[in-house]
Length: 313
Image 1 (cartoon, rainbow, N blue to C red):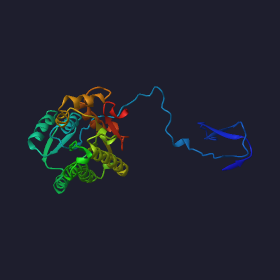
Image 2: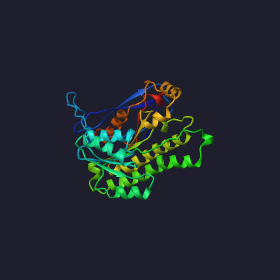
Image 3: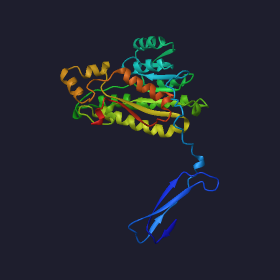
Image 4: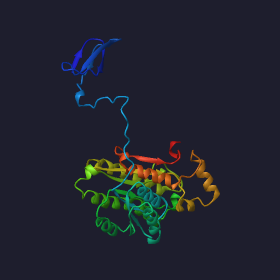
């Protein structure tokens, strides 16, 4: 570092590469001059930087395919979980379907098998920590987790009971942690995980980014999912496992249909979505497939909002 009693110094670095001068600095004086100025010149070894791509170089996009990968989807018996499972199978993944109701899981399995992929049904309550850890621990291998099981019970803040509070937190937060922990442990059994890669997709919500009346516990739970996603992403990135969340708006599922049973509620929701309609399950499934695929190889710790512009306001 040099101190000089002269006009302010502005350093311009240009990429001049030759054997004698790998770097070049041009110093230009500007007015008005101060009493003293301090400058720091930092040398950058440009030989370690990739060459500038030629404008005619062909662009090769990374693949959205998931052939040879195995995915586990919780809450796979219907709604967003079923759509995600089917979407993953269309991209080439074999899918493990986990949920509480065998009949609905088998219906999803039929759709997965129609895509010429294998589907395995696992009946389990994700809130049963020991059971779900045991099931995941017995899997042969795992590359992708879609943490999707969840619930919501809209109530006024002052009326929320301990039972409702515990139920939502147990399913929307605690089970996400437990399932993700068991799934990551299984992924890391492969010694080549860093090279092979892995992905966790947590199903969050636009309510993980905003607040809303009658949804204090739900908003709290989804903000927790966003924090878990970011913390996992930072810790697991060196191991080759990416972690992201998908944040849908109100989407056409049985749960949302029940929540918006009255026309007044539906009109109020639609007025808050700039695109002017409810989301579709296949739109959310597409986001899941993207985040699980090599196309998102540089994406981790992110929230992909599929909300029609709700949170942009």
